[in-house]
Length: 85
Image 1 (cartoon, rainbow, N blue to C red):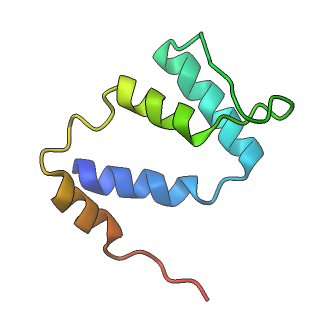
Image 2: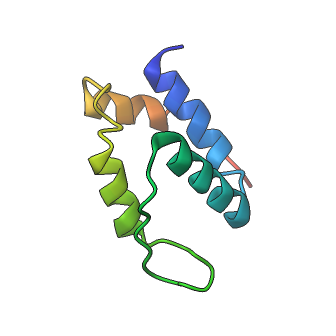
């Protein structure tokens, strides 16, 4: 599967998850990737991380290295988005 199509598929599924399901997925992915030292900020009671933490982790994981042309990738991702009313 093409990388862009795969990212789009994953993103479409992520928006359907509840916050609790996202937290479970985040924990699973952290274990899968060997990230044992989770830095928490924001709401400590619920374990929600700030957007800055998410972006820092994304940058440190080099998750977007496989994308050759970021502008083209963005155009493709924005295409065919389901419209809701």
